[in-house]
Image 1: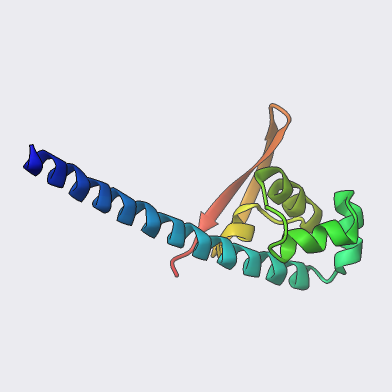
Image 2: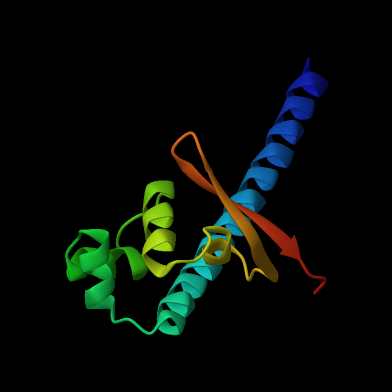
Length: 118
């Protein structure tokens, strides 16, 4: 009986450690994504106030999302990408690809991208 308890406790420790590593990984990637978003906004040449107007939100609401005071969700990323005229992928990853074609289907715009080796 003791070996089963110790074995289960050991499995719990391993699972807890893996979960903790996953949380750290996600937190680091979210921070990297926020940096990329701010970089893409600067590259676009529009002010954050103008961007907030395009997104239909207040400048303070946009600032909260960009400064870790509010969550960034998929809908925000999609509207931000559309307002900046870039792909959602380029907001989440330092994308080394180029758009070669776009097409509309089912109410969505899809991009065909050519990747380049980094």
